[in-house]
Image (cartoon, rainbow, N blue to C red; front, side):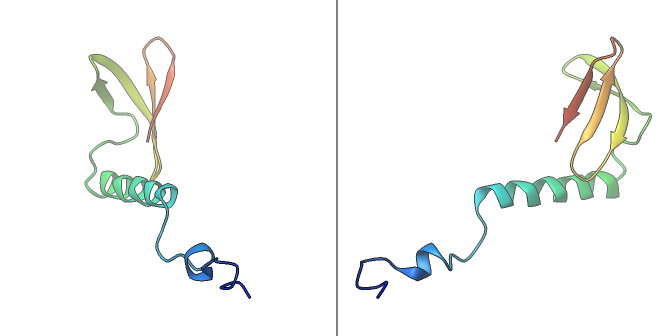
Length: 77
């Protein structure tokens, strides 16, 4: 019945692989994993990004939370 209407159920409902949102999430987790594994940034480190110094408050698989010396918080995926 579905094929008679011109719709291919394999393409619409059984699409293999991951879409771009899923790939972005997986890439963020892998980058965070290697960031933690290689111990590149630790909590309490002072980092210099774009010429501005910041304190690394939190380092997770998904993001790094920085607080600059003016008190502003910045999240880096």
